[in-house]
Structures are given as C-alpha cells and as structure tokens.
Image (cartoon, rainbow, N blue to C red; front, top):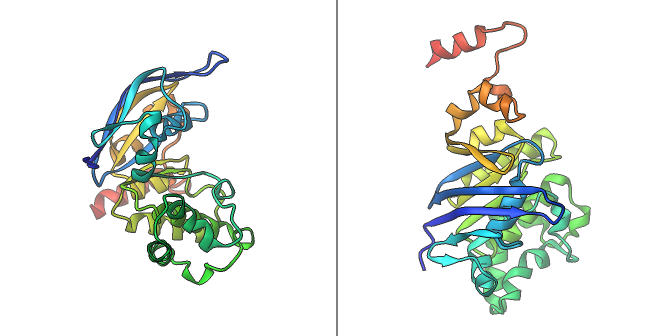
Length: 259
C-alpha cells in the first residue's frame, strides 16, 4: 500500500434535510504537503473532513488513501493511516489519565504493551507534555488538552494528520505553542481553520470552499492576499497581510522595501 497521497474524487454529500454540504469536490494531497481548507461557517469543511475519515460516506464519488479506497471494509486500515484531531479536545480525551488516552488507540489494535508504552512516551515527548502523563485530562489547560489530543493521534503513527480548528479557543501563548508544534511535524497535514494567520504560517497550499464547492486551490500567500476572493467567500485577509489601520498602505510599502 502506498501512503504518498490522499485523493478525493467528485465527492457529493447531502444531509436528510436537503442541505447539499459537499457538491463535487475533487483534490489530491501529496506526501508531505501541508494543506489548509478554509471557508465560511456552513461552507462544508467539517463534512468534507468526515468524508475523508470515513465517519460518513459520500453519496457519489470516492476517497482514496494511497491505493486503498475508503469503505466500511477498509476503515480499520484507513484509521491507522489517517489521524484526526477534533476541534474540541474534550471529544477526544475520555480516560482517567493522559497516558491511558494516548495508549487507547494502540491498545485497541492489540499491540504488545511494551510497544504501546514506547509509542505513548514518544508521542508525549514529541508534543512536550511527557511530564503530564499521569495527570487527569480534565485538569489540564486548553493548550495542554490540545497537545494531549494530538499525542493520542500521533501514537497511532499515522501518515496524514487531519486537524479541525487546532488553535480554536486557545490563549495567545498556547496558540503559539501549537503552531510551533505543527510546524515541526513532517507529516502530511490537512488543516481546517478560521485562523488564517495560522494557516498562512503552516500551510503552503490552500483550498477555499464555498457552498460545498472548491472555488480556489493554490499557493497560500497568493490566495490569502486576494481580498476580493476572500470577501466573496465570507472571509477576510489575515491580519498579518492587512495594512496597518494607523499608517494605511505604509505597511505594504515597508514589505516591498524589505523584500
């Protein structure tokens, strides 16, 4: 099995109430890419992630990971290749200790306890919370919970990390720590977020979704500098690309001088 790509082909999904959440989405993510998926609320981002993970299945189209199609029969294999970090860490942390939460996935796949321990300690060390392994997840800060949720996915040693709003509800220091953590990972990454400054910093490519369709797919800075495109999709340029409200266009002039 090749893990060097994830491909979505002509995905369609309509909810029972008639809401067409995903309408013919196609794209490919190559090995090692960091891809941001952005769009206004209700654009179809979360539905798309659930289709990629096999939480729900498309009414038309297919998802392929490496050379394996995402179906009910292949889910066990797919879940070892794709790891998803949910928007709310409390949806992912449910054991009595951080260690047990991070060990849950490997234990579920009947690995030897020695290998489970090696994976858990490596994942906790990687996200910088090895010292919290015996703590209750419910007593952690928001940033610590996020790190624990990421570790619980890393312990499965996935090829692709899929993250839904990884910096949501974090204070500035915790947000910066999570960004630095994600930048350090060599995994293929797919990230949905309204934090466009974070997307600009981490992702080299962006997909813009509007009403269940991809309206732009390209280089991150180029797309995030297109104020007209973003406005038409209910988005705004990242603060780091906007002109200073006090000095107007002077900020852009300084950028040109420094480039």
